Image 1 (cartoon, rainbow, N blue to C red):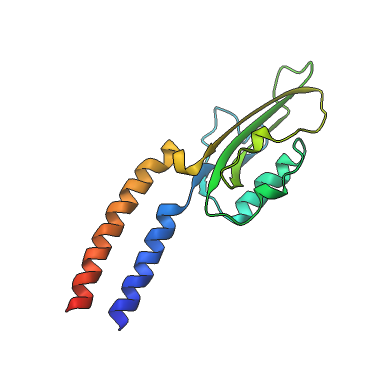
Image 2 (tube, rainbow, N blue to C red):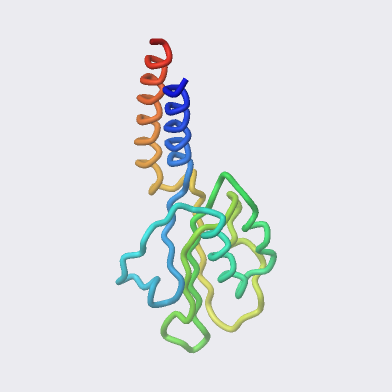
Length: 150
């Protein structure tokens, strides 16, 4: 019985690893600068809320992007005020769901807003992670079948 429970626990950890999205996370122009190494994080409700809270500055109707979801999108937003030569706002992080926050109506502002969003299921960053996790899940399934059969 213990073997079966251990197998199920290991399988659920691997499944969570396989389905989680990894997105770059940074808040602020300095942290998001192209000269910086931006850490990738697994998207969680806390990361989503942190990202969307920052995006409330420019976008309307952001509440649907904080809802609990099994699918996440990576988003990158930069803002440059009119007349400025450098960005005055930058954030990268996660939003919930497959819909792009970049297509949402914006609040009136004077400047240039650049936004890009990519759903985790089509993210090239997750392809190798998903392939590795699929192989790992298959191996664990075979080992579990052998263990439970003996």
